[in-house]
Length: 85
Image 1 (cartoon, helix red, strand yellow):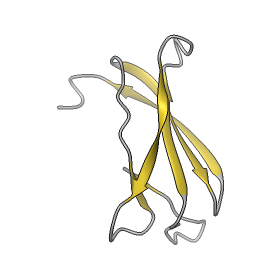
Image 2: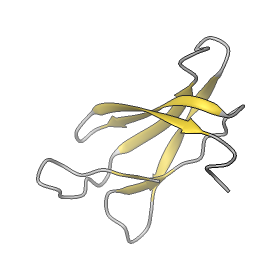
Image 3: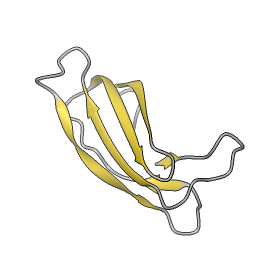
Image 4: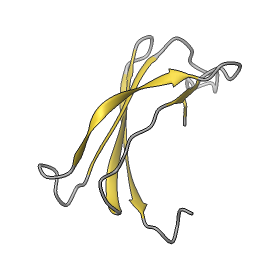
């Protein structure tokens, strides 16, 4: 689930979002094909998509926003079985 807003905090609607991920330690070996995140009904600026990670560890998750305010956000997250149950 991704929430996007402008600098004033106003939710951005009608954006085209894609989600993808790759392991920084093995970028050519472990990467996830981009998937489209869909708007969540009744929640302006909220989008959902699902990526399936191949293994536990640190992943660089990328959110690419196309129009009306294009941007790319990359955040490294550590996925471990004991952290997510």
